[in-house]
Amino acid sequence: MKQNNNLQYKIIALDLDGTLTNDAKEVTPKTREALLNAQQEGVVIVLASGRPTYGIKPVADCLELNQRGGYMLSYNGGQIIDCKSGEVIYSKYLPDDVIPVLYSYARSHGHALLGYVGDEIVTEMPWDEYVKDESRINRMAVRHVDNLLTSLERHPTKLLMTGDPAKMIAAEEELSRLVGGRMDVFRSAPFFIELVPQGIDKAQSLLRLLSRLNLTQQDLMAFGDGYNDLSMLKLAGLGVAMANAAPEVRADADWVTLSNEDDGVAHALDRWLHSEP
Image (tube, rainbow, N blue to C red; front, top):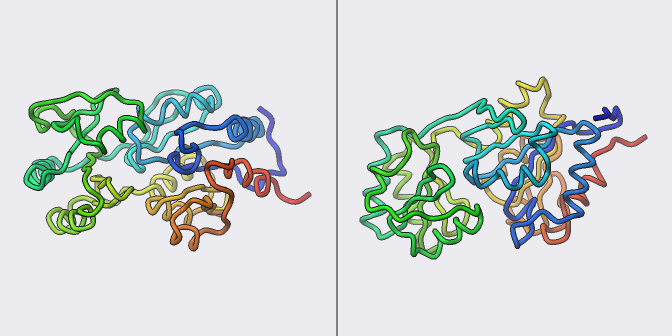
């Protein structure tokens, strides 16, 4: 790998869905080539997503991070994994006492609640349309369980609640009142409520990784389209929003590139990766 001293940014953090991948959840050949070329020049690639680790791995393999030394920030930053060594270099878990509260709330309101066990999604409601969306996004099979509480892995990093978008705003507010101060609750999509450890977000985990790599915020270029990407876009030396991003995300970004359907990541790398000669 050659080091290019003309690089303006040494590390690139990429959200996946709606950012790095197109609407078919694929990395296009043009974007893949741009990121492989950046790695060849010495850039570190970080995939930062709300997806579970298993759901990020196919994208990491597509970009050859296991060979070239990139990182995965899964569960919205709840875990940091070194793709080359497989080492989990950071992990944070939900408090044990909040999990029954989340379970009781979901059951009483008829919302699906799911967790991740190995390469499977586990839930009591596998027929739920939004559970099926999560399965499709992550390419993970869904396993029907009779009791989610007894089927979860010990110390989960994240649970996901799904439901009718019209009801999720109220559910987010109610859950925040129930468990606020012990964990974080936020919507990553109109039909998804992320249930994660307190203080976990992409920016905080990127700060940990930057420190480990002896890099600074100014070395970082970050790409995103959703509200859960805002913290890392604000952290980065250059925060790039996709054209398809939420209006508030575009407004807070340093620059807006083309959409995820139009190779927006490759377009921005061509414009910004190298400093002017």
